[in-house]
View 1: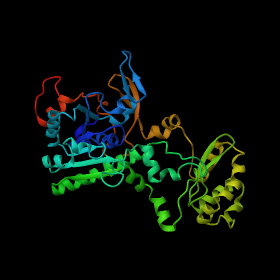
View 2: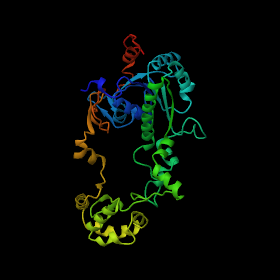
View 3: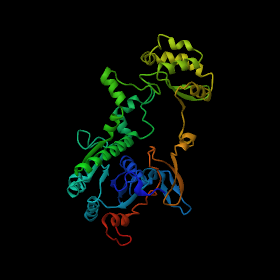
View 4: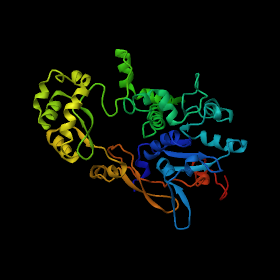
Length: 397
């Protein structure tokens, strides 16, 4: 096991008032990199994700959520009743010695409870306070309820997702929650560097809406530059072709021929090398504009062989290509195994399972589970003793 003092964020203390996905994901990034992330949960059930299936059960009938485990490994858990003034005062003592607070309550909730940025920064001027919400802390939509799917719809993302004539489709991964978590983690680290230079903390207001607009830079720049409204194109690309899924004799596969040379290789692979010089497909811009005609020409050829045949042929020719994997297929893939992206995880009830690793390789860093995902309130005593240097009676909070 790696010495925790060797991890990049060793010594950084984080209080996470996180629920479900966005806040906990931001905290999990920091925890995986070595920060001491302490999750503050309500005593009666804790984070709602603790009840989300799959619930893995041990021989004694004790269950633990694998969804919860995936976002809360390497963290510790304490409990606090946020409506109890005594518990609020205990939390403020922890705030005085921590570096970062993460919260994703509705705007204004923690402020009303005495745990807003103004109150806590008065205790700790170096504090970095990160609020994650659907639409931000101010503005016309600040008080609107938000879940990932509603923000996907609001952000424009769903307008470019799915088939051209199909019904609205959300991304299968909760990208609103996770993009907000990524932006929060990245911004908090930038602010931490500034705090170490200036000694002054600050407030971070990260919205799911802003995060999804931020990662849509190609779509928004298309609109700004041309005035054209980006559209849903299925697996196709508005500015490149062939760059989509095709149907072989047995299954779909994807190719992405992003330049003239690669297009010539595709044309040669299907036995129609003359298409490389066809006036309709001579440039990338023309290929994108005429990709429906291209599809009509290529699809019959692709249907004559299996997906495996075409993937091997495209690989041989250096054309980027891939199958369309499900999760069991990609998680057992030899390349994923080489990257060590799947790691064993032991749940607090003793069940042995697996989790995905921190996905970025870094010199002098090796991802590992150095703390099991925590039972609710498992570290009430430990955190206060270590952070504050105070002894607690066993079982007290």
